[in-house]
Structures are given as structure tokens and as C-alpha cells.
Length: 122
Image (cartoon, rainbow, N blue to C red; front, top):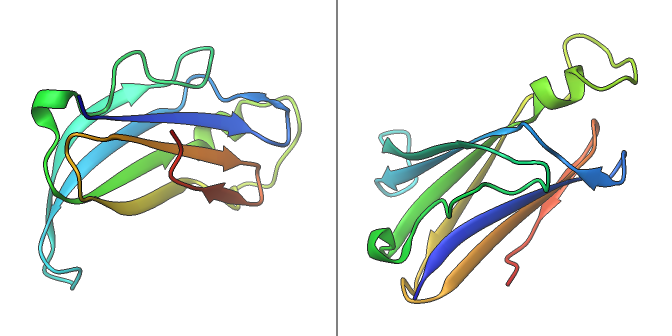
């Protein structure tokens, strides 16, 4: 049974990133400026830095292009460490494709106020 999940880790604080808004969009188009998108999921990470439900459940998985948006600026703005305003990172988009709708796609985000990385997890 396929599904799409995410997990956000604050690498500067050494902890999961709770309270981060995560939006998932389905992308229609070929990657050019004429792309259209539709919001498929809008969730907030829990105390473990995960969403309470998969971003896509088995019945919603489909081959195609997707974009995750992580609203990380508000998370770091609420941290006790002073940061510049505006923040260096605010909205982090990650565009990826699902080729096998029966597989589990896990897209973690490792983030600090100055950098981020991602990979396809398990």
C-alpha cells in the first residue's frame, strides 16, 4: 500500500520541528512556467516533527509530479535564538515525482536557519 509521508528535523536545535505548516501540491504540466497546481494536503507537524496523517494515502497515490512546501520561517522566528528579520529561509519548496503509486515515499527535511537537505527515505 503506497503512501507519502514527511518528517522535519531541526539540525541546529537537534530536535524534531513541531508546528511547521506543510502543504502538498499536485503539479500539472511539463515543468515550464505554465504549470498549474492543486493543493492536496495542508497539515502541521506534531511534536515528533511528523504529520499525524500521511500526506497521501494509498487510495490517493498516483504517478505524477508533486511539490511539498515547508513554511519554516515561522518555526525559526519562534525560536529563542535571535535571527535576522527577514529570515534567510522562509518557504522551502521540494518538487519530486512519484513513479510507483504502490510504494512508500518518505520525504524528510533536515533544516537549520541557514540550510536544508532532503532525500527519499523509507
